[in-house]
Image 1 (cartoon, rainbow, N blue to C red):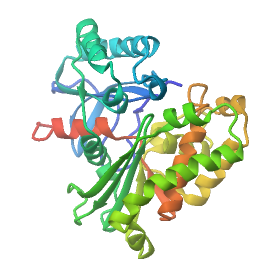
Image 2 (image 1 turned 90 degrees about the horizontal axis):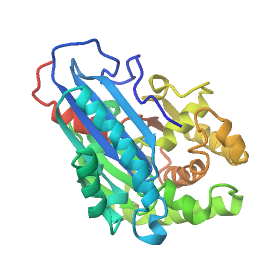
Image 3 (image 1 turned 180 degrees about the vertical axis):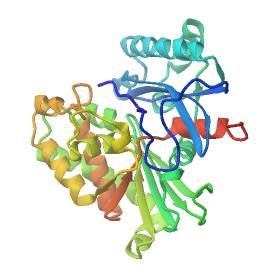
Length: 344
């Protein structure tokens, strides 16, 4: 399902996201090519953040089959190149002054990634940069920081991606606009695409779902042991923020939206009880039932339960009780950094 990542209404939080009228200001761009999605934002500086003037999002499943073959398939590369061709057209049309175009887990892992990057450069004219897991985590935090509560000293930020799941442990320093200190981060080698390919996404029995949760919980334990996060959770010193298609989808389903609207989802809150109810509801549907929900759609119907299982593991490992939903992340972090010092 194609999503309008940024609608006309301002988002919750401090960043001004909206369609902008024509202004004689420089345009900046950020592109995030993940295992599942290709996303682009074009924006210009505005008071307190930036205003989006163009956006694009398409599910390309670049990492489809990667976990078994070790490489990007021809079909996946072709789908992705077509999406990038649309992005290149928007970049030219909007006369972007500066941009950063990054690729994450699928390109980090694929043995034929160099060949793919060369094709993108030669056919599309976009120079993709493969970023490390640490840089990915840093950019997610930079993009989501305005949604963090300034009076809660610690934060767990996570991003359930297609091929990996990023967990970041932060300490706030009082200033709402200050950059949080990253105390630690981990990139788990699975996401919604890899779990779906391994466990299946068409018919997910309770036993299969429990197996996904158990694997994710086991993978989280070393990070918990290293940082002692549960101790701070018990002391009510931790907030949680989720930046991923899984949490935004669950928020849209919980809100019973007739279509996905970013302005209603970004910055909203979900209690763990609400997450459990929505996850249980989706697990009780067949693939057609999940596809029929307008906030899931056919392209996510086989992936959503894998995401629910990973989220379930995160919530059980760190029982904060509620999380803030962020329909923002790497691209917003890139734009904030590109625009530092730019005139509004």
